[in-house]
Length: 336
Ligand code: GTP
Ligand code: MG
Image (cartoon, rainbow, N blue to C red; front, side, top):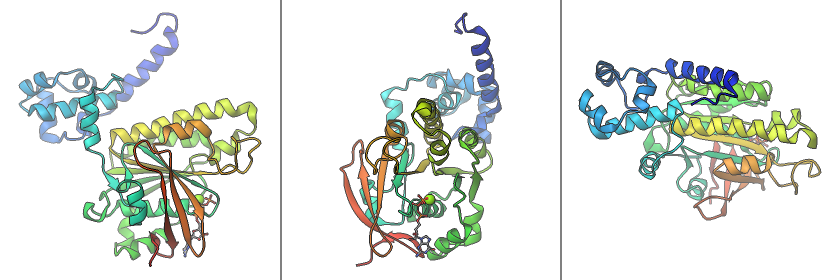
């Protein structure tokens, strides 16, 4: 229950949360179509909270849906309602079974990542200017629209652009190279310019709302850190910057988890070692970004459009590096 001492503030907050939950219809839960929603409503399960606290057995009995499905619906409702910070091992296993992988366009890089960029976690691409981060984000956006047999998700993409570097012309080139309809691809990519770090945080929070209208399973932030870096200069503001970045990254991760989506972000390397964490090849944001991103790829320039991609700090994949090609047609393997 709400602590008496902090009553005013936390009650307000709780009310906000309740309001937010009410706005989410049970049809928004994965696996709940119109027919299921009707059955659930008839049985009295008409909002997220009621479902979040139900038991699979009861739900199955009174609504006539299978127990397995009931359990999935409950898990999803809990995640969306943001209650019950605990998941059982079984629930986590079930959620992890849904993980899918999005192709980068390079087989070598996909292999390095264990099959592609994973859903339900954050994948960070970092490197100096011109190392190909933005090109890879464009390519992921295009690839997401492809069907599963081509390594895509047949989905829409949300791209938070903080540096005004999104180029529809590049999307068209990359789409054509894949034999896709460029206009259809462009229609599937929703770009939001973030004008400052607060705006960026807000866009991250609002991403979920977009899923009501579009089947979004890829969320891109290019660049994750540029606004934070320029707005919070110097050691004095470091703590505040890290706190905001942390919150933002957790919003992104939550989106990835709830919607089984890829979250891909870019980050520059620090060019001012006196202010930003150690050696000049370390990514901005230090520990906060490092601990929240599950996969980190360090990109380095090489000759003639080639880039070296190195997997750093992965929880269960071996470290290693591969060479990829960044060219007119986008990201690909280096041709022999
Ligand atoms: P910052 O955002 O400045 O940190 O850099 P970044 O890592 O995002 O670099 P970006 O992805 O923008 O890479 C730029 C590089 O991609 C260029 O130097 C080119 O080598 C390559 N590139 C971009 N567009 C094209 C293109 O249309 N054709 C070809 N061949 N290469 C391109
Ligand atoms: Mg860029």
